[in-house]
Length: 477
Image (tube, rainbow, N blue to C red; front, side, top):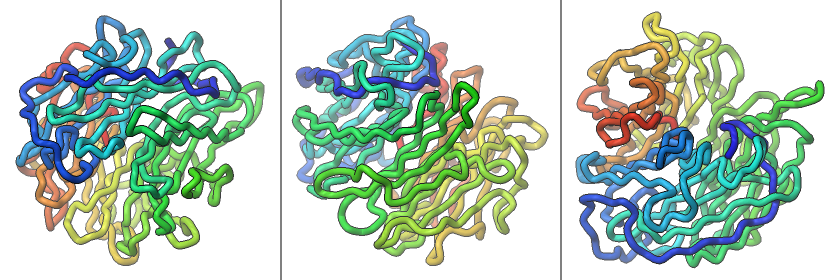
């Protein structure tokens, strides 16, 4: 067991635990015949509809505070259906381990069809798993999809004691690093990252790269992976913010590591250390066929988004957008946390990725820490402030109203939830309803995000009320 922010230790891979196929608390989700092609990320039952997965790492499970759980609402032609839901804990059938205080199960989520069977799988980080002290621990559970949704076929892997600067899973990202047509999983930890291959059979090959930054506590880690150079291999962006100890200065760094058939390079091809990174995402914002790197940072007044274009030689110079950029609604104010979360997806169907930006501590109509989300639109020259939208609980017909400490924008996601080919905006408000949390879903369209006709899921909607779910704090990208 451990605290939420910890420096994790342990370099060796833990033993892999495999279990037989079955169901894991799934209710009212019809089975589907196995598709012929690999499933898209987030389609756990292979029916062609994107499913919604939410992590509650500080939630109560089996009576243990902070043990954590994951909630899934399965997709339909009109979007996720809360009646077709699944709540997964480490007590669920087939899930390895058990729910213990401060396990943090659900701290990060990633999805891909790792075994290429037509059903997407879900990787779940338990950031405090197997910890016997305040600065170590962390593991991953990979839950395989099936015709009935996420099943009880699962493997768990992670860390045990070893090198003082070893990884300890904090965040996960999925992408094809080796270029063999099979998704790989990258686990980012406080001190290193690990590339896992062979996930189709549960026979993992893990390659760890240690990122040395001396003694101290790494308080925040972000990862994302995509092919920035267009060579068919996904590259890794890895960022950390480190608090120094014994009078040493704190530091921050964003590194990009090149992907290849043999895995990830040991040394970065790009590095930056000028501004603390809060969040990362990737998408082709300018439509040139290369993935671009999107970083939410603590720079400027109230936060920034920096978009670095992908090129044949790596990522290029960043375009900086903040709330004082021409066309961006609102005004930058200290403490807004603009960029605390970022996500990409094509909202208007123009073939270019757009960017959602969360500012969970922004003051809205004098209400402090009510929070807001901004959508920035991509174009042939990259992202600008032109046409940007700012959305809060006081906008249009968005359900509810802005209240202090709602933290609307604590997490954002852009994914096609209704199958119309355009990304829909999901915004988390983890502080809504006294830590119950909420997730707001707004439809994308040719004119951008609509603030009418949206839907809101509360902890009561998904049957996890009274468990400190903080819904919307962790959303599957």
